[in-house]
Image (tube, rainbow, N blue to C red; front, side):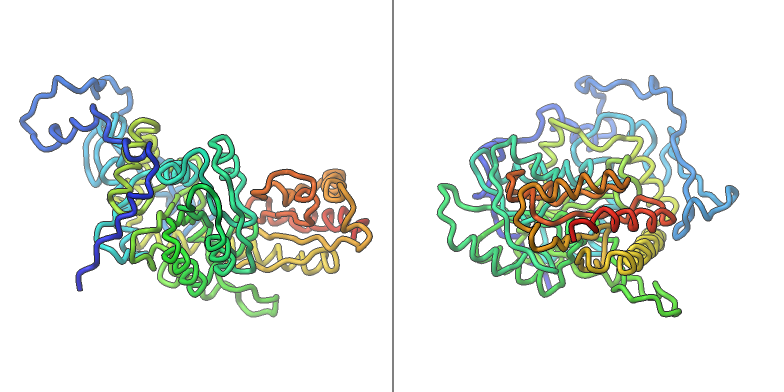
Length: 461
């Protein structure tokens, strides 16, 4: 059965998006690519013979293994030379390019999206990004400009707040529960909206939400999507933790943990996979599952939307760094392949599941009566509600004193107010929340950190 075409939402574009078009110089590259006999005197490109690089590459652990547990002789050589092979040669990777990315890199992300999400409409496409923060800016600017309002979770990623405030885009926070954004609350805000400009866009992190760690079930995603359809909203699905899903927490019992890690096949389906209209702009990144310094990601949406992001790329980032694209493209196309990529993701899931379990075990041991939290099924974070004594709960500045106590006890967590779309007003600053990350510190330091946190909180609880 043929898939339907996406719904045309271009009527919601900002004026800047409407007039954004292909870079005039970039538009000429199609002639060079289509005609092998063409001699170009038009392109102001440096000649590849002047590039001093004969080979670029890396030593990489085999799929499903870590560097720490791999002998030097078993490391894989991932490299690109001046000669094309499974991927393009360095003359292509190190040259200026269009905003779609080098074909072998772009093709892998497209194939991966098809395999994992299988979008339900026919005209979907992918376009490269420098990671999800870059992609968010481009997606936001398609539909929001100065004076518009973006719907967001009541606690959200601080870089989003830092991006929209200078743009004079307002934030409308939506109530959350243990699964993230509450669809009824989203519907209520949209239904009762009286702003001068209509609401066009909602932003959410559906998996391992930063900072709360909440993950939407498929039922919750369907409900959020239905509200978006009702109010004709575009959804930004920011999902950098999507592949860091794991099993529900089980208390230590002597039985083996991590026997049912989801890999790729058993992940909670994405909003993109439910999208029949083409109203989801999905942001993916290699940052949490390869390395953030690569600055490589991709965006999935209807082609008329990815075209606009391509045009924006061409007047800003061009595309991710050629060195990064070369390493990722060679690794995925020449070494790991899709099967190896899945083995790698299972290994990453196991690492973060182990970290989650060790951290939660110690929190239950040392923080009883001091904090409340929901154990996450994905990601890197625990969101603590500090159980302040009743007489302190309305005391101005109490959470600043809690933070100062943590620093004095040599342990650092992030104050909850930093994640609030409402800004740093005093009432928000005194909300009794702090975020812990179990992703970076050595697991051998977890107990030291948590006992210090207990000491810091004890005078207030």
